[in-house]
Length: 219
Image 1 (cartoon, rainbow, N blue to C red):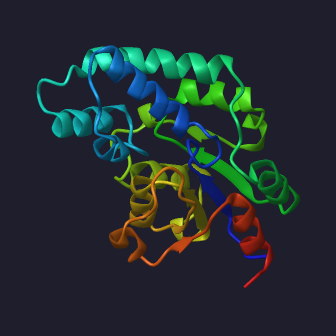
Image 2 (cartoon, one colour; image 1 turned 135 degrees about the vertical axis):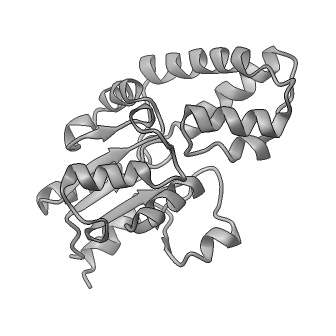
Image 3 (tube, rainbow, N blue to C red; image 1 turned 30 degrees about the vertical axis):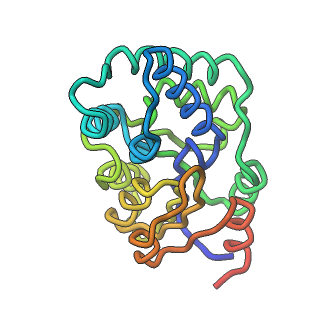
């Protein structure tokens, strides 16, 4: 088995199939306000925290974009669905977490989602007990792609970044983890990596099942 002292997971779009839920809630919120959103702008928000999402949408859609209204409706729709309806796991989640448990490798989560919401989502999905801790996007100053959240996780773990593996689906998450010095595997969700991102040279796999196989194969 390839050895890392800790595995640092993103959450949305990697562990939980929530990015499609968030996208649908955003589109519905815009449509209720008579808007037809450009999803190229939206896709730039994937993996960012609340503050950065606001900046991207207002820059992309212009100063007349009713962000506060859209955000309120969007958040209500998304929160209702993830807190009251079953949240599907992404492929291979439980098998990978059981594999890490058997090999005494610590998994933790860094997510752009607010901490309290993330905890409810993970409880709803039935996988919260697997993780040592969860760092939410509201618990750090600078969200992804800034490396702060990964550096904070490594400090809390007491491990050097080079001894940890980051698992991410988004470009913003990959940039954050690489800048912090972690080894990175990307498992794309809604958006495939650009040529610029591929040029970073990190490993890109199709699913967490493939991550488990990669870890199990050894050096």
